[in-house]
Every structure is written in C-alpha cells, then in structure tokens.
Image (cartoon, rainbow, N blue to C red; front, side, top):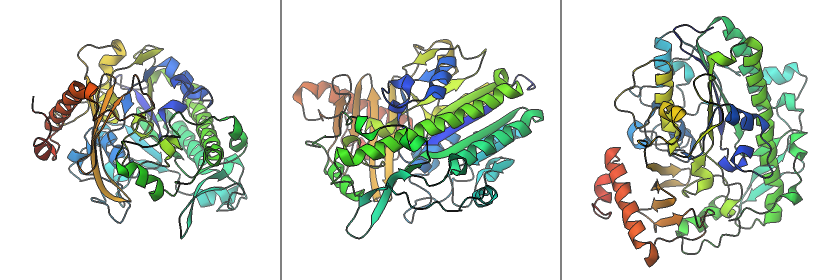
Length: 471
C-alpha cells in the first residue's frame, strides 16, 4: 500500500502511435483490446494534441509541462543540426520533484531528451533494459536479426531506407518484449518500495515497422483500404507537402506498396497492446491496481501513408498531432469517462504533481487534468489548443497550429498558410485559407493564434504581430 494517499504511477509510453488505430477511437481494423479496456476503466482524452510533432521536443514538453519555445528543445537532440543536445539544467521535471518526496523512480526504454544526460540525471533511481545483447544471448538468439525477407523500402537515387518487414526472431527476442519484461521486473521489485513512478517507454510503433510473428501476419494487407486522404493531390497546399514525399523517398509508392507496411504497423500496435496487458496484469497480481494511477500516451503520431506521406515532419496534419492519451485510477477517475476538451502532453506534468500533492510551478504552460475527471465538459477549460514545429533532419522550418471548435489553422511564415474545417473535411483535403466563405473564421483563428503566442511568450510573437490580426 502507498503512504500519505500518494498513488503509485505506471506510465506506459509509446513512440509514433496514431490516435485512430485504437479500437476505442474508431479503428475498424486494428485491434487494441488492452487500450480499449483501459479507456473503459478510466478516461479517454479524445482531443489530445502533441505540443510538437517530433520526439525530443514533445518528450521534453511532457516532463516539464512547457512548450518547446520555453524549454529550448526545438528539434531532436541526436542530430547534427540539433539546436540543443540536452534539456537545460534549470528546467524542472516532475521526476525530480517526485524523487524529492520519497518516490522510487524507474525508467525502461526510450528517453530521447538528451545525448548524455539520461533518466538518472533527472531523479530516476533505476534504469532497466540496458542489455539486449546479453538478453538475446541468454535466449540463444542472434544479437542482430537478419534483414526481413519481405522488406518494404523508401527509395532514393543513392540508397534505400527500410519501412517495414517481418522480424526473423521469435517475439520473446524482440526489443519491445524485453522492455515489457524489464518493466514487470521493476514492478515486482517495487512491491515493497511504494510509492513508485515507473515509466515503460516503448520505441514502437515507430518505423521501421519490423515485428515478429504472429503479429507480422495478423492483418491481411489486401484487406486494408486506402486512408481517406491517401490520394491527396496536395493542390492549394504549401509546396513543402509535395517536397516532403521526395525527402522521405516515398513519392512513387502506390497504395499496393503501402498496404504491407500499414499491415505491419497495425501488427506492431497490436503486439504492443498485448505487452501492455502483461504490465497491467502485474499490477493486479501484486494487489496494487487500486493504488496506481496508470497513464498511457504517445509522443506524436505517424503518417503511415496518409496524404501519401511517411514518418512525420513539417506537415501539421491530424495523423501526427492528434494523439491518444488515457488514464486510469480506480476511485479517483470515474470509469468510462470521455472528454472532448483540448488536452496536451504538457498537461501530464501538472496532473502528476496534483495527484501527488505537490505544488504546481507558476511557469508551466500545461494544466492539471483533474477537473476533467469530475466534469469531462468542464466549462472553464481551455477552448483553444496551440502546437508548434521547428525542425527535423531536413533543417529548420517553423510552423504554428491553432485549434478552435472544429477549425484548424496552420501558420507557415515561410510557406502558404492552411485552414481546415475538420467537421466537413476530417481528412484535411481542402485548404480553405483563401476561401472567401471562411474569411471571418480565418481572421478569428489568426487572432486566437496571436493571443496564444503572447500568452505562452512565443519568441515569434513579435514578428507574427506584424501580420496577424490584433483584434
């Protein structure tokens, strides 16, 4: 049992999972029984957004509760063009605060918030999954799986890039399986070290979508219809949308080319879902289910062929920015709750602090989510959501996104802007920015964007104010 009514926290995180692959979020094909059950036992945040559609900035925002333009991690920290390679030491994370009140902290899997400074520099005591080579050697398996025989590649004039395939190892030799086993080991170790915070952070379903059997063959590629926007002509959209297909080497892929890759992505998601079930069952086996706040989220989404695109990048479409997030805490979060208010990864930090009776710093951009537990339609909640993008391995290209009601505005200072009516056009095929029928809506969204930029001290706000409506 925990002390002082502070919960244990099991935080399950993934990398690059789309919102629409969860059954509870409407997927007609991909099967996610564990996540669906978790949603039914807790709360489904149905309008959650990543603050930035790329790994390091999103992850840094999650642990600090602050936007990229405030914590300083603008792009991925492992690249040659990284603006910062480490989260600044004066940026406070929730793990450091939990450490200060006696929590035992463990981390398994992906970190990606610094090149050298890992979880132990931010208050974690235990870091699991440090020896995949020894683990595979103990199972009598090769340390590096052979190239998949059914590999799908992105192609360039001078090389090719693996998108998907079947892993030539049994599932227990897969890295994600190893992460789950390490998470279970730490959960059992923490039985007498409560309260604890354990984050099990899976690399998948990030590409390459290489998964073992039986998951690789779980979905028949020929039974997967094209995404509603796969055949997007990209007409009346920024040129970068067309160029990005070439940057990713997928400009010539047909839907028949994409089908096996999407099938592997779905298989990857279902494989992970089965691993989540093992983690949640361990809470039950230890008798600590009711004492544990479970958090599930991804850092951002994935195109997986939507709009004909691969991976993510300077395109702020829903497939990348609209993400799944679930929480369960028996006795605190009413089962079967869904909220359609705008929420974000920046809200996880203050939510954890409030759940553990810690004061919430005044400089956070995020909000504690507890009011939505009691009233999912809480009247005083935010009515706009802002997001940003600054750079990936293709160099610097900054954009901003604002959501209000069912409208979405993307501000591209170095390209043409975008406006989508998600009620009429959920696939984001029609850019309405220059449509006279949307002139008042465009004006309102531009004004709301500038308000958000001012409220969050976005350094671009001074330049934006020269162009965006002030009133």
